[in-house]
Image (tube, rainbow, N blue to C red; front, side):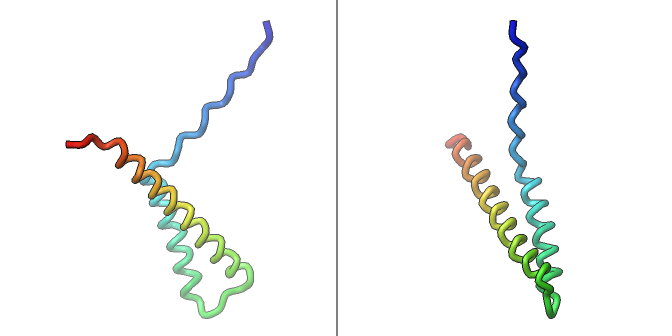
Length: 75
C-alpha cells in the first residue's frame, strides 16, 4: 500500500480583528514616515509598500464585511 502524505490544511483566513490590527500598525508606521521632513530612498520605498499593504488589508476587510452581510438572516 503506498504511503500517501496528507495534504496540509489550508491556512485559516485572518479575522476582522487581525486585519484591523495589522492595518493600524501599518498606519502608525506610515504616520511616522509622513511626519519626517525628508525621507531617505529606503523610507520612500517603505512608504509606498505600506500604502499598498494598507490598501490590500482594507480590501480584505471589505470582503469579510460583504461575506458576513450575505450570511445575515433576513428579519
